[in-house]
Image (cartoon, helix red, strand yellow):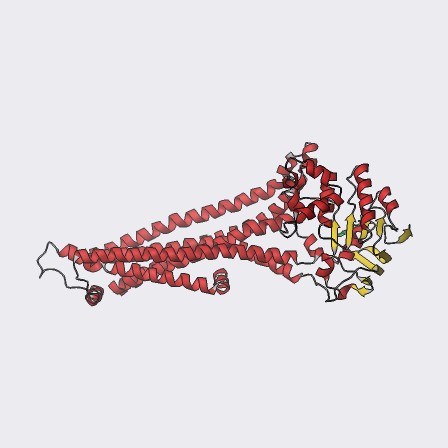
Length: 568
Ligand code: ADP
């Protein structure tokens, strides 16, 4: 219920239009139904003499008055025509309302997806690193869809509720005493069935939690399929995921059972109620047949619709937790927004200086007072054993991490005062593991930026020593690189990643062990390129590679524990 209030507030206009269309369609249905009463009387009385026909009841008289006012004669043909006209109007209005609901539900899913994605992308790096990729994928795919479904269920419940009110009102007008008794009995049935709604809600919540954890484990496993297959351990994935899939299965079965039990149990109880009511009205109270018939139809439909309301509400309760889980993910990411620094436009004419920088990951000290200079338009390399903090230094320079103590200056300007996004736009970054997008070579270099011309892409690929092999591919720049770039070799992927870093003419090129997968020839070519680029480019590279270290102007050697020796 809270979900519907939330969404009605978020989308007031579409929701208002939908409720209006639903209400009007309900009204049309009610009018059509009311016209049935005089029609029935006419039909039943057609064989009898006029004087023995029963006088019109209160509702019937009302309907006859309205008909007279509309200029419709109370004949069988006119009444049937009115019923058909009202049913048509109802169908059109219902179609309009349902279209509105469908569109809004699609918007709910899209808006939720974008909200989570934006908040995640803007969150601090150290927060983002701890978010399992599978959980995020699950939020964007499954949870957003279930949230939109929940909205659909909620509005469908509302549709049925409005129809229940209309039928209830007709029944009330026919006989308020009988209707009141009927409604009380109906309420008891709804109340008795409510525990099935609670069961479904709990099972739905379990589904949300389990899906999230299952998807994060699954994504992890899928990323390491090659070693698993290579060592014939793929069977272990079953064992790893069996527990969670079994519990998920159990939750889904509970949902099915709760749904089916509600369907079957409720319908049966309502039928018994109606049968008992009809018996009471005709057998005991000797009420008029036409009145009983219309009452049975009106109350029967009221119950049927109230039952449907509860069934939709059960589905809503089942799916609702996905919406709240997604909202929570989004809010957590929002609370961890990255501070984008100050407003000073950065330059890189002199260089970058780290002064007495300290950094620790969750209490584990990595840099303990590091002093380091990265002169502009030079090649600087960071060397040292793994775990000595080389990547951490790079993350500090890009502003993905912030030092605990000490300062970083860019051309003498304190880092915190610099416009961080402007600074990052000056950076070309080549990561250690090159994972390409499942797209063309062209798209992998431009990252989808349509303003970048093919000529520029070619120039960047040439600089990165990649043009020769790209030109030799069957479709050149338009060749698909396969899932994660799997159709290219490690060295080829690295060169494409270098081209991607060079495409926007960066002023600072960062290479995180970016030449590790290259053969000596390509490597020599890249090093020659880097040396020629350094006239207008500052290069900072982590490397284990002797040739690159030798080509560097400055070599910083980091030791585990954050000590530094400078060579070169
Ligand atoms: P290098 O690049 O020299 O191999 P890193 O800068 O990647 O070293 O890591 C330095 C140390 O920090 C390592 O001991 C590593 O385990 C730890 N570390 C790196 N990233 C994280 C992280 N996100 N959370 C916790 N510890 C980390």
